[in-house]
Image (cartoon, rainbow over all chains, first blue to last red; front, side, top):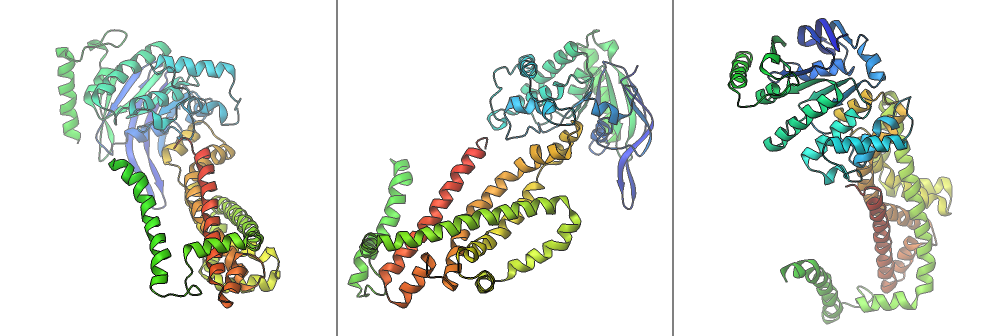
Length: 258
Length: 248
Protein backbone atom coordinates (compact mmCIF):
# COMPACT_ATOMS: atom_id res chain seq x y z
CA UNK A 1 0.00 0.00 0.00
CA UNK A 2 1.21 3.51 -0.76
CA UNK A 3 1.81 5.87 2.12
CA UNK A 4 0.09 8.75 0.43
CA UNK A 5 -2.12 8.82 -2.64
CA UNK A 6 -3.73 11.92 -4.10
CA UNK A 7 -5.97 12.41 -7.13
CA UNK A 8 -6.75 15.80 -8.66
CA UNK A 9 -6.18 17.32 -5.27
CA UNK A 10 -6.88 21.03 -4.92
CA UNK A 11 -5.84 22.69 -1.73
CA UNK A 12 -6.19 26.15 -0.27
CA UNK A 13 -8.30 28.10 2.12
CA UNK A 14 -12.05 28.46 2.40
CA UNK A 15 -13.11 32.04 2.92
CA UNK A 16 -16.38 33.95 3.20
CA UNK A 17 -15.79 35.43 -0.27
CA UNK A 18 -15.09 32.05 -1.84
CA UNK A 19 -12.23 29.63 -1.86
CA UNK A 20 -8.63 30.64 -2.38
CA UNK A 21 -6.76 27.88 -4.18
CA UNK A 22 -3.08 27.62 -3.35
CA UNK A 23 -2.09 24.45 -5.13
CA UNK A 24 -4.14 22.52 -7.67
CA UNK A 25 -4.15 19.30 -9.64
CA UNK A 26 -1.86 17.26 -7.44
CA UNK A 27 -1.65 13.60 -8.53
CA UNK A 28 0.87 11.91 -6.36
CA UNK A 29 1.70 8.51 -5.03
CA UNK A 30 4.31 8.20 -2.38
CA UNK A 31 5.53 4.72 -1.56
CA UNK A 32 5.65 3.45 1.98
CA UNK A 33 9.06 4.29 3.42
CA UNK A 34 9.95 6.80 0.73
CA UNK A 35 11.88 10.01 1.35
CA UNK A 36 10.31 12.77 -0.75
CA UNK A 37 11.58 16.33 -0.71
CA UNK A 38 9.43 19.22 -1.86
CA UNK A 39 11.05 22.28 -3.37
CA UNK A 40 9.45 25.48 -4.54
CA UNK A 41 9.22 29.26 -4.28
CA UNK A 42 7.31 30.99 -1.50
CA UNK A 43 3.55 30.81 -1.89
CA UNK A 44 3.52 27.62 -3.97
CA UNK A 45 1.66 25.67 -1.31
CA UNK A 46 4.46 23.43 -0.03
CA UNK A 47 3.49 23.84 3.61
CA UNK A 48 -0.19 23.76 2.78
CA UNK A 49 0.23 20.33 1.20
CA UNK A 50 1.81 19.02 4.41
CA UNK A 51 -1.07 20.51 6.38
CA UNK A 52 -3.60 18.61 4.31
CA UNK A 53 -1.74 15.34 4.88
CA UNK A 54 -1.64 16.08 8.62
CA UNK A 55 -5.39 16.80 8.72
CA UNK A 56 -4.77 20.40 9.73
CA UNK A 57 -6.60 21.54 6.62
CA UNK A 58 -9.36 20.02 4.50
CA UNK A 59 -8.74 19.79 0.77
CA UNK A 60 -10.92 22.02 -1.43
CA UNK A 61 -11.45 19.26 -3.99
CA UNK A 62 -10.06 15.91 -5.07
CA UNK A 63 -9.06 12.85 -3.09
CA UNK A 64 -6.33 12.12 -0.65
CA UNK A 65 -5.69 8.93 1.23
CA UNK A 66 -3.00 8.41 3.81
CA UNK A 67 -2.07 4.77 4.46
CA UNK A 68 -5.31 3.95 2.70
CA UNK A 69 -7.44 6.02 5.05
CA UNK A 70 -8.76 9.52 5.49
CA UNK A 71 -6.09 11.84 6.96
CA UNK A 72 -8.22 12.37 10.09
CA UNK A 73 -8.15 8.63 10.85
CA UNK A 74 -4.39 8.50 10.55
CA UNK A 75 -4.03 11.62 12.68
CA UNK A 76 -6.18 10.17 15.46
CA UNK A 77 -4.09 6.99 15.38
CA UNK A 78 -0.97 9.08 15.94
CA UNK A 79 0.57 7.70 12.78
CA UNK A 80 1.72 11.05 11.54
CA UNK A 81 4.38 13.29 13.09
CA UNK A 82 5.00 16.93 12.23
CA UNK A 83 8.12 19.06 12.60
CA UNK A 84 7.68 22.81 12.14
CA UNK A 85 10.22 25.36 10.98
CA UNK A 86 10.29 26.76 14.49
CA UNK A 87 10.82 23.98 16.97
CA UNK A 88 7.51 24.82 18.71
CA UNK A 89 8.70 23.36 21.97
CA UNK A 90 6.53 24.49 24.87
CA UNK A 91 8.91 26.74 26.84
CA UNK A 92 7.48 25.82 30.26
CA UNK A 93 8.18 22.11 29.74
CA UNK A 94 11.54 20.40 30.01
CA UNK A 95 12.93 18.52 27.01
CA UNK A 96 11.62 15.28 28.48
CA UNK A 97 8.14 16.72 29.15
CA UNK A 98 8.00 18.17 25.64
CA UNK A 99 8.76 14.82 24.05
CA UNK A 100 6.25 13.06 26.31
CA UNK A 101 3.49 15.50 25.36
CA UNK A 102 1.85 12.89 23.08
CA UNK A 103 1.04 10.58 26.03
CA UNK A 104 -0.30 13.46 28.11
CA UNK A 105 -2.93 14.75 25.72
CA UNK A 106 -5.82 13.33 23.74
CA UNK A 107 -8.54 10.84 24.58
CA UNK A 108 -6.11 7.94 24.66
CA UNK A 109 -3.70 9.58 27.07
CA UNK A 110 -1.97 7.10 29.30
CA UNK A 111 0.20 9.31 31.46
CA UNK A 112 3.95 8.88 31.52
CA UNK A 113 5.10 5.32 32.13
CA UNK A 114 8.58 3.92 32.67
CA UNK A 115 8.61 2.67 29.09
CA UNK A 116 7.98 6.24 27.90
CA UNK A 117 10.95 7.50 29.91
CA UNK A 118 13.08 4.81 28.31
CA UNK A 119 11.81 5.81 24.88
CA UNK A 120 12.71 9.47 25.48
CA UNK A 121 16.18 8.39 26.48
CA UNK A 122 16.58 6.25 23.37
CA UNK A 123 15.33 9.02 21.08
CA UNK A 124 17.68 11.58 22.59
CA UNK A 125 20.52 9.14 22.16
CA UNK A 126 19.58 8.43 18.54
CA UNK A 127 19.55 12.17 17.84
CA UNK A 128 22.85 12.78 19.59
CA UNK A 129 21.53 14.89 22.46
CA UNK A 130 21.57 12.37 25.32
CA UNK A 131 21.49 13.86 28.80
CA UNK A 132 19.43 16.96 28.00
CA UNK A 133 16.19 15.56 29.52
CA UNK A 134 15.87 18.09 32.30
CA UNK A 135 16.82 21.21 30.33
CA UNK A 136 14.31 23.86 29.32
CA UNK A 137 14.07 24.89 25.64
CA UNK A 138 15.62 28.30 26.43
CA UNK A 139 18.79 26.54 27.53
CA UNK A 140 19.26 24.79 24.17
CA UNK A 141 20.87 25.86 20.91
CA UNK A 142 18.77 26.10 17.73
CA UNK A 143 20.08 22.75 16.48
CA UNK A 144 19.37 21.03 19.79
CA UNK A 145 15.84 22.44 19.88
CA UNK A 146 15.14 21.10 16.41
CA UNK A 147 16.49 17.68 17.41
CA UNK A 148 14.09 17.68 20.37
CA UNK A 149 11.23 18.60 18.03
CA UNK A 150 12.14 15.64 15.82
CA UNK A 151 12.29 13.38 18.87
CA UNK A 152 8.79 14.52 19.85
CA UNK A 153 7.47 13.86 16.35
CA UNK A 154 9.02 10.37 16.42
CA UNK A 155 7.80 9.57 19.93
CA UNK A 156 4.60 7.79 18.85
CA UNK A 157 6.47 5.84 16.16
CA UNK A 158 4.61 7.51 13.28
CA UNK A 159 4.48 5.85 9.87
CA UNK A 160 4.69 9.27 8.23
CA UNK A 161 6.88 12.20 9.22
CA UNK A 162 6.06 15.63 7.81
CA UNK A 163 8.79 18.24 8.00
CA UNK A 164 8.15 21.87 7.10
CA UNK A 165 11.54 23.55 6.47
CA UNK A 166 12.77 22.15 9.77
CA UNK A 167 16.38 23.27 9.31
CA UNK A 168 15.69 26.55 7.52
CA UNK A 169 16.73 28.71 10.46
CA UNK A 170 19.96 26.85 11.24
CA UNK A 171 23.51 27.64 10.19
CA UNK A 172 24.96 25.57 7.36
CA UNK A 173 27.25 23.37 9.43
CA UNK A 174 24.45 22.44 11.84
CA UNK A 175 22.08 21.94 8.94
CA UNK A 176 24.46 19.52 7.18
CA UNK A 177 24.94 17.57 10.38
CA UNK A 178 21.19 17.36 10.96
CA UNK A 179 20.66 16.23 7.37
CA UNK A 180 23.05 13.37 8.01
CA UNK A 181 21.33 12.45 11.27
CA UNK A 182 17.89 12.64 9.70
CA UNK A 183 18.94 10.20 6.97
CA UNK A 184 20.20 7.87 9.69
CA UNK A 185 16.88 8.15 11.54
CA UNK A 186 15.05 7.41 8.29
CA UNK A 187 17.18 4.32 7.61
CA UNK A 188 16.62 3.01 11.12
CA UNK A 189 12.88 3.68 11.40
CA UNK A 190 11.71 3.17 7.83
CA UNK A 191 9.34 6.11 8.23
CA UNK A 192 7.94 7.79 5.13
CA UNK A 193 9.22 11.38 5.12
CA UNK A 194 7.84 14.42 3.31
CA UNK A 195 10.38 17.19 3.66
CA UNK A 196 9.76 20.77 2.53
CA UNK A 197 12.80 22.95 1.89
CA UNK A 198 14.02 26.06 0.11
CA UNK A 199 17.47 24.59 -0.39
CA UNK A 200 18.20 22.74 -3.63
CA UNK A 201 21.21 21.09 -2.03
CA UNK A 202 19.13 19.83 0.87
CA UNK A 203 16.37 18.59 -1.43
CA UNK A 204 18.81 16.61 -3.55
CA UNK A 205 20.87 15.31 -0.66
CA UNK A 206 17.91 14.02 1.33
CA UNK A 207 15.29 13.00 -1.20
CA UNK A 208 14.87 9.81 -3.16
CA UNK A 209 12.55 11.91 -5.26
CA UNK A 210 12.28 15.68 -5.49
CA UNK A 211 8.98 17.35 -6.23
CA UNK A 212 9.26 20.87 -7.64
CA UNK A 213 6.26 23.14 -7.22
CA UNK A 214 5.57 26.38 -9.07
CA UNK A 215 3.69 29.37 -7.73
CA UNK A 216 0.88 31.57 -9.10
CA UNK A 217 -0.94 29.34 -9.67
CA UNK A 218 0.58 26.66 -7.47
CA UNK A 219 1.11 23.43 -9.37
CA UNK A 220 3.47 20.47 -9.64
CA UNK A 221 6.20 21.39 -12.14
CA UNK A 222 8.41 18.33 -11.94
CA UNK A 223 8.83 15.12 -10.06
CA UNK A 224 12.42 13.99 -10.35
CA UNK A 225 13.52 10.49 -9.39
CA UNK A 226 17.05 10.46 -7.95
CA UNK A 227 17.36 6.77 -7.19
CA UNK A 228 19.62 6.30 -10.23
CA UNK A 229 22.07 8.83 -8.88
CA UNK A 230 22.15 7.42 -5.35
CA UNK A 231 22.99 4.21 -3.58
CA UNK A 232 20.08 1.94 -2.60
CA UNK A 233 20.15 3.30 0.95
CA UNK A 234 19.93 6.85 -0.40
CA UNK A 235 23.51 8.00 -0.09
CA UNK A 236 25.32 10.39 -2.40
CA UNK A 237 28.33 12.67 -2.37
CA UNK A 238 27.53 16.36 -2.61
CA UNK A 239 30.41 16.88 -5.06
CA UNK A 240 29.55 13.93 -7.35
CA UNK A 241 29.27 15.41 -10.92
CA UNK A 242 25.92 13.69 -11.46
CA UNK A 243 24.56 15.29 -8.29
CA UNK A 244 26.00 18.67 -9.26
CA UNK A 245 24.31 18.39 -12.68
CA UNK A 246 21.05 17.46 -11.04
CA UNK A 247 21.23 20.49 -8.82
CA UNK A 248 21.78 22.87 -11.73
CA UNK A 249 18.94 21.18 -13.62
CA UNK A 250 16.63 21.71 -10.63
CA UNK A 251 17.86 25.27 -10.27
CA UNK A 252 16.82 25.95 -13.89
CA UNK A 253 13.37 24.49 -13.28
CA UNK A 254 13.02 26.62 -10.16
CA UNK A 255 14.17 29.77 -11.94
CA UNK A 256 11.44 29.27 -14.54
CA UNK A 257 8.71 29.08 -11.91
CA UNK A 258 9.91 31.76 -9.47
CA UNK B 1 35.07 49.13 40.54
CA UNK B 2 32.84 50.60 37.89
CA UNK B 3 30.42 47.70 38.29
CA UNK B 4 30.33 48.13 42.06
CA UNK B 5 29.68 51.84 41.58
CA UNK B 6 26.73 51.18 39.36
CA UNK B 7 25.25 48.18 41.16
CA UNK B 8 25.66 49.18 44.81
CA UNK B 9 27.07 52.63 45.47
CA UNK B 10 24.90 54.64 43.06
CA UNK B 11 21.53 53.09 44.03
CA UNK B 12 22.35 53.62 47.72
CA UNK B 13 23.79 57.10 47.25
CA UNK B 14 20.82 58.45 45.26
CA UNK B 15 18.03 57.94 47.82
CA UNK B 16 20.42 58.60 50.72
CA UNK B 17 21.39 62.01 49.30
CA UNK B 18 17.72 63.01 49.09
CA UNK B 19 16.98 61.79 52.62
CA UNK B 20 19.99 63.69 53.96
CA UNK B 21 19.01 66.85 52.09
CA UNK B 22 15.48 66.49 53.43
CA UNK B 23 16.76 65.96 56.96
CA UNK B 24 19.10 68.99 57.04
CA UNK B 25 17.89 71.45 54.40
CA UNK B 26 14.21 71.48 55.37
CA UNK B 27 14.83 72.95 58.88
CA UNK B 28 17.41 75.39 57.43
CA UNK B 29 14.82 76.59 54.92
CA UNK B 30 12.53 77.31 57.83
CA UNK B 31 9.77 74.87 56.87
CA UNK B 32 7.93 73.97 60.10
CA UNK B 33 7.54 70.27 61.04
CA UNK B 34 3.72 70.43 60.88
CA UNK B 35 4.07 71.10 57.12
CA UNK B 36 6.98 68.75 56.39
CA UNK B 37 8.52 66.69 59.19
CA UNK B 38 12.09 65.42 58.91
CA UNK B 39 12.86 61.74 58.20
CA UNK B 40 14.03 61.22 61.79
CA UNK B 41 10.80 62.86 62.98
CA UNK B 42 8.76 60.39 60.89
CA UNK B 43 10.85 57.45 62.11
CA UNK B 44 10.37 58.65 65.68
CA UNK B 45 6.59 58.87 65.21
CA UNK B 46 6.52 55.36 63.75
CA UNK B 47 8.46 54.02 66.73
CA UNK B 48 6.58 55.93 69.44
CA UNK B 49 3.10 55.35 68.09
CA UNK B 50 3.72 51.83 66.78
CA UNK B 51 0.65 50.17 68.44
CA UNK B 52 -1.60 52.73 66.70
CA UNK B 53 0.12 52.20 63.33
CA UNK B 54 0.21 48.40 63.65
CA UNK B 55 -3.51 48.28 64.41
CA UNK B 56 -4.35 50.34 61.31
CA UNK B 57 -1.84 48.67 58.98
CA UNK B 58 -3.31 45.29 59.76
CA UNK B 59 -6.77 46.38 58.59
CA UNK B 60 -5.37 47.70 55.31
CA UNK B 61 -3.24 44.56 54.79
CA UNK B 62 -6.32 42.35 55.11
CA UNK B 63 -8.39 44.53 52.76
CA UNK B 64 -5.66 44.88 50.14
CA UNK B 65 -4.76 41.18 50.05
CA UNK B 66 -8.38 40.04 50.02
CA UNK B 67 -9.21 42.58 47.30
CA UNK B 68 -6.14 41.55 45.30
CA UNK B 69 -7.08 37.86 45.44
CA UNK B 70 -10.79 38.34 44.75
CA UNK B 71 -10.35 40.95 42.00
CA UNK B 72 -7.71 38.99 40.12
CA UNK B 73 -9.46 35.66 40.50
CA UNK B 74 -12.69 37.17 39.16
CA UNK B 75 -10.75 38.72 36.26
CA UNK B 76 -9.10 35.40 35.38
CA UNK B 77 -12.44 33.55 35.47
CA UNK B 78 -14.16 36.19 33.37
CA UNK B 79 -11.28 36.15 30.88
CA UNK B 80 -11.73 32.39 30.48
CA UNK B 81 -15.47 32.87 29.85
CA UNK B 82 -14.82 35.68 27.35
CA UNK B 83 -12.17 33.70 25.50
CA UNK B 84 -14.41 30.66 25.13
CA UNK B 85 -17.62 32.50 24.26
CA UNK B 86 -17.45 35.18 21.60
CA UNK B 87 -21.14 36.14 22.05
CA UNK B 88 -20.77 36.66 25.81
CA UNK B 89 -17.60 38.64 25.18
CA UNK B 90 -19.32 40.79 22.56
CA UNK B 91 -22.28 41.39 24.88
CA UNK B 92 -20.48 42.11 28.13
CA UNK B 93 -17.02 43.43 27.33
CA UNK B 94 -18.47 46.89 26.55
CA UNK B 95 -20.24 46.82 29.93
CA UNK B 96 -16.98 46.03 31.69
CA UNK B 97 -15.30 48.76 29.68
CA UNK B 98 -17.97 51.24 30.80
CA UNK B 99 -17.53 50.33 34.46
CA UNK B 100 -13.80 50.78 34.08
CA UNK B 101 -14.32 54.40 33.00
CA UNK B 102 -16.06 55.29 36.29
CA UNK B 103 -13.45 56.95 38.53
CA UNK B 104 -12.81 54.81 41.59
CA UNK B 105 -13.46 57.88 43.77
CA UNK B 106 -16.98 58.03 42.39
CA UNK B 107 -17.51 54.29 42.63
CA UNK B 108 -16.31 53.97 46.24
CA UNK B 109 -19.20 55.93 47.88
CA UNK B 110 -21.72 53.81 45.96
CA UNK B 111 -20.07 50.59 47.12
CA UNK B 112 -20.03 51.88 50.71
CA UNK B 113 -23.69 52.86 50.44
CA UNK B 114 -24.52 49.32 49.39
CA UNK B 115 -22.23 47.36 51.69
CA UNK B 116 -21.98 49.56 54.75
CA UNK B 117 -18.90 50.48 56.75
CA UNK B 118 -17.18 47.14 57.47
CA UNK B 119 -14.24 45.55 55.69
CA UNK B 120 -16.36 44.28 52.78
CA UNK B 121 -16.74 47.56 50.83
CA UNK B 122 -12.98 48.27 51.03
CA UNK B 123 -12.21 44.78 49.80
CA UNK B 124 -14.62 45.34 46.93
CA UNK B 125 -13.06 48.69 45.97
CA UNK B 126 -9.61 47.07 46.01
CA UNK B 127 -10.93 44.14 43.94
CA UNK B 128 -12.64 46.40 41.40
CA UNK B 129 -9.53 48.47 40.85
CA UNK B 130 -7.40 45.32 40.21
CA UNK B 131 -9.96 43.71 37.98
CA UNK B 132 -9.77 45.43 34.62
CA UNK B 133 -6.02 45.34 33.81
CA UNK B 134 -5.90 41.65 34.73
CA UNK B 135 -8.97 40.90 32.62
CA UNK B 136 -7.46 42.54 29.54
CA UNK B 137 -4.04 40.94 30.04
CA UNK B 138 -5.50 37.52 30.72
CA UNK B 139 -7.67 37.61 27.59
CA UNK B 140 -4.61 38.46 25.53
CA UNK B 141 -2.56 35.84 27.34
CA UNK B 142 -5.08 33.06 26.79
CA UNK B 143 -5.17 33.94 23.09
CA UNK B 144 -1.41 34.18 22.71
CA UNK B 145 -0.57 30.61 21.67
CA UNK B 146 1.02 30.58 18.20
CA UNK B 147 -0.70 28.87 15.30
CA UNK B 148 2.08 26.24 15.25
CA UNK B 149 1.41 25.44 18.89
CA UNK B 150 -2.29 25.04 18.22
CA UNK B 151 -1.54 22.85 15.19
CA UNK B 152 0.80 20.73 17.29
CA UNK B 153 -1.99 19.99 19.77
CA UNK B 154 -4.43 19.33 16.93
CA UNK B 155 -2.08 16.76 15.38
CA UNK B 156 -1.93 15.08 18.78
CA UNK B 157 -5.77 15.02 18.83
CA UNK B 158 -5.79 17.07 22.01
CA UNK B 159 -9.13 17.60 23.75
CA UNK B 160 -10.42 21.11 24.57
CA UNK B 161 -9.44 20.32 28.17
CA UNK B 162 -5.84 19.64 27.06
CA UNK B 163 -5.86 22.80 25.00
CA UNK B 164 -6.72 24.85 28.04
CA UNK B 165 -4.49 23.24 30.66
CA UNK B 166 -1.52 22.28 28.49
CA UNK B 167 -1.37 25.29 26.21
CA UNK B 168 -3.58 28.32 26.76
CA UNK B 169 -3.23 28.62 30.53
CA UNK B 170 0.56 28.16 30.71
CA UNK B 171 0.91 30.50 27.72
CA UNK B 172 -1.05 33.19 29.57
CA UNK B 173 1.00 33.11 32.78
CA UNK B 174 3.72 35.63 31.83
CA UNK B 175 1.05 38.20 30.97
CA UNK B 176 -0.97 37.34 34.07
CA UNK B 177 2.04 37.93 36.27
CA UNK B 178 2.86 41.25 34.67
CA UNK B 179 -0.62 42.48 35.55
CA UNK B 180 -0.43 40.94 39.04
CA UNK B 181 2.71 43.00 39.69
CA UNK B 182 0.83 46.17 38.82
CA UNK B 183 -2.18 45.03 40.85
CA UNK B 184 -0.10 44.90 44.04
CA UNK B 185 0.10 48.70 44.05
CA UNK B 186 -3.47 49.29 42.87
CA UNK B 187 -4.96 46.92 45.47
CA UNK B 188 -3.39 48.97 48.27
CA UNK B 189 -4.60 52.20 46.64
CA UNK B 190 -8.11 50.74 46.38
CA UNK B 191 -8.19 49.73 50.04
CA UNK B 192 -6.95 53.18 51.14
CA UNK B 193 -9.46 55.01 48.93
CA UNK B 194 -12.22 52.86 50.41
CA UNK B 195 -11.06 53.77 53.90
CA UNK B 196 -11.01 57.48 53.05
CA UNK B 197 -14.64 57.50 52.13
CA UNK B 198 -15.99 55.79 55.18
CA UNK B 199 -13.91 54.20 57.87
CA UNK B 200 -12.32 54.81 61.23
CA UNK B 201 -9.74 52.05 60.77
CA UNK B 202 -6.90 51.49 58.36
CA UNK B 203 -4.09 53.55 56.82
CA UNK B 204 -6.60 55.54 54.74
CA UNK B 205 -8.53 56.58 57.83
CA UNK B 206 -5.27 57.39 59.59
CA UNK B 207 -4.18 59.60 56.68
CA UNK B 208 -7.47 61.55 56.74
CA UNK B 209 -7.45 62.00 60.53
CA UNK B 210 -3.81 63.02 60.63
CA UNK B 211 -4.33 65.56 57.84
CA UNK B 212 -7.28 67.22 59.62
CA UNK B 213 -5.36 67.36 62.89
CA UNK B 214 -2.07 68.66 61.40
CA UNK B 215 -0.31 65.52 62.74
CA UNK B 216 2.14 65.53 59.85
CA UNK B 217 4.55 63.00 61.34
CA UNK B 218 1.63 60.57 61.65
CA UNK B 219 0.48 61.34 58.09
CA UNK B 220 3.95 60.67 56.66
CA UNK B 221 4.28 57.54 58.79
CA UNK B 222 1.07 56.24 57.25
CA UNK B 223 2.37 57.03 53.77
CA UNK B 224 5.63 55.19 54.45
CA UNK B 225 3.71 52.16 55.68
CA UNK B 226 1.32 52.10 52.72
CA UNK B 227 4.13 52.15 50.18
CA UNK B 228 5.96 49.56 52.29
CA UNK B 229 2.85 47.39 52.06
CA UNK B 230 2.76 47.76 48.24
CA UNK B 231 6.43 46.88 47.99
CA UNK B 232 5.98 43.81 50.21
CA UNK B 233 3.07 42.57 48.07
CA UNK B 234 5.09 43.26 44.93
CA UNK B 235 8.03 41.23 46.23
CA UNK B 236 5.74 38.33 47.12
CA UNK B 237 4.30 38.32 43.59
CA UNK B 238 7.79 38.46 42.08
CA UNK B 239 8.89 35.53 44.26
CA UNK B 240 5.86 33.45 43.21
CA UNK B 241 6.48 34.40 39.58
CA UNK B 242 10.11 33.26 39.80
CA UNK B 243 8.92 29.94 41.17
CA UNK B 244 6.15 29.40 38.61
CA UNK B 245 8.05 30.69 35.57
CA UNK B 246 11.45 29.18 36.37
CA UNK B 247 11.93 28.22 32.74
CA UNK B 248 12.06 31.88 31.64
